[in-house]
Image (cartoon, rainbow, N blue to C red; front, top):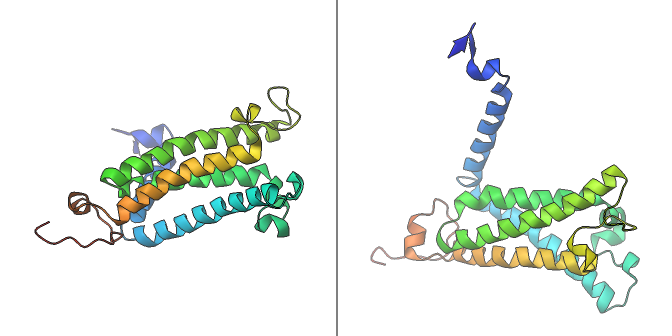
Length: 204
């Protein structure tokens, strides 16, 4: 319905929102269409690099016996602010959440189930980082803590907790990637990308 030459969405000021949703939908179609293979590979490199940083940090603390404030992973040695910036940690958690969600339509069968599991776990991980970032912005900590603290951080040290979070997100992602790269014949028939490394005969 039009009102004085305006559509219903225009009259309620929704056109920019509708256009934004359309742009996001087109982007997701591209990420799960012609751009899928390269985009997914790029995303997984970022995921692996971040997880490796957490492993290096744990190694520095437990194997090298470095003090916690000096265990900053690899990049953190050159750029200490990377480790201490809540904005950066939150941004990565958000990128992970959005990335896993955006690539979900490209996964089918068993791969989709594992990828979806990683998405659910990352959602909680993102909420925890959101609490930390919110405390920094508000300038007020929760639970009477001396520093910004997430919920599970009340019981577990931050280093170990976030290594755990990244691991329990990483593992189902890797299993999902395995099934994405090596799908069964029925699963491969429903895939719209060229990621599969398994060749199925016409009679399979």
